[in-house]
Image 1 (cartoon, helix red, strand yellow):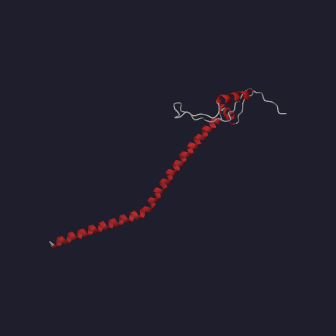
Image 2 (cartoon, helix red, strand yellow):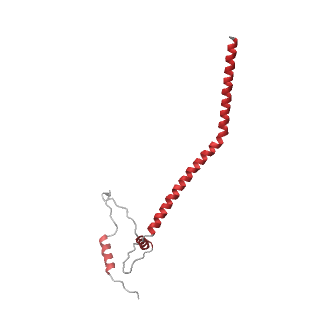
Amino acid sequence: MRQTLDNVLNREIQRSGAIIVGVIIAVAAVVDLSHPVQIWFEQQARLAELDNEVAAARAALAEAQADVDRWSDRAYIEAQARERLMFVYPGDISYLVVNDVDAKPTKSNEVLGTVQRTSIDWVEAFVQSYAFAAKPETESE
C-alpha cells in the first residue's frame, strides 16, 4: 500500500510539474508575442485609415472628372460665363438685382393685442410723396 501511495504521489508531482511547465511556457509565449501582436493591430488600424483615405481620394477624383466632363459641354460653359462673368449676346437685355434679400414670411393670422396710433397722418404723407414724385426735377442754377 505504501508503494502504491508513493507511485500515486510521484505521478501527481510529475503531472503538476508538467502543468507548471506548461503554464510557464504559455506565459512566456504571451509575453514574447504581445509586442508583435500589438504591432499587427496597429498596422491593421493604419491600413483601415489608408483605405478610408483612398476611398475619399477616389470620390474626389470622380467629382473632378464629373467637373471636367461638365466643362467640356459648350452649353455649361456658356451658362457659367453668363452667370459668373455676366456675359450676354448682342441684343440681349440683362437685369441685375442689386439688393436681393429674402424677406421673412409674416404670419397672416397673427393679431396684435392693442391698436396702435401713429404720430403722422398717412394720408398727408402719401399726398406729399405723390407730389414730390410727380414734380419734375429742376436744374440747379
